[in-house]
Amino acid sequence: MTRIAQTFAQLKARNKTALITYIAAGDPDQQTAQDILNALPAAGADVVELGMPFTDPMADGPTIQAATQRALKAGMTLAKTLEMAKAFRHRHAETPLVLMGYFNPVYKYGCEKFITDAKDAGVDGLILVDLPPEEEEELAPFARQAGIDLIRLVTPVTTQERLKTLVSSASGFLYYVSITGVTGTAQADVQSVAAHIRQIKAHTDLPVAVGFGIRTPEDAAAFAGTADGVVVGSALVAEIEHNGAAALSPIKEKVCALKAALQNIL
Image (tube, rainbow, N blue to C red):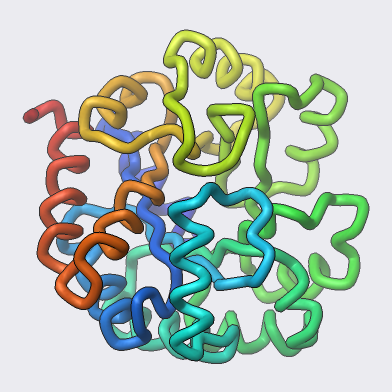
């Protein structure tokens, strides 16, 4: 089993929900970001997403947009993001690591080379929010050969026919975008999300993680019985925005609180 599949299977066997955390690589600088990244599993993250900074992050709200700009201004590149991934993997043999971002930097890097280097760095999955299945052939064969999961986004307006197309080429887990909008800008409606997840699960056995509207431990707890995982990104990135190089401690505290909520020990 892949690290992603094994993690979700183990949590399901214990009737637990995965905590998936996101930070942007290189925010506010590479060393601080590396320290935060390395600390996430011990704080409670079951799966870690590492954002690949890009100049035009169209799916992201103001918080993550600002994070990517800070990272790029500090000299972050895709090659350095892979260096961070490799350093994380040296410390954490079992925690799944997913790179999230946009296709343009990957295309410029070279699809085959990127997958080769990502595999070498210990990357388990990719979320490329602007790469639909119809346009993936320059990347997907290399990813599948390397055993790197291609994680698809499903939204509240995804039709049933479109859903069939998405799940047919997805692996790892499905990322359910709980709001119509960008990251970190609205709160998800639990009942509406639960109904959509039931529809999704009629088409696939893949785990479904909910993101884009979860900021607090209470938000996380509300989805614990609905989704297989919850994704928290903007709330963590905001700690970096507010605390800069001193963000490690408050982020660890926030991740611990989120994990406690999912363990029903608020």
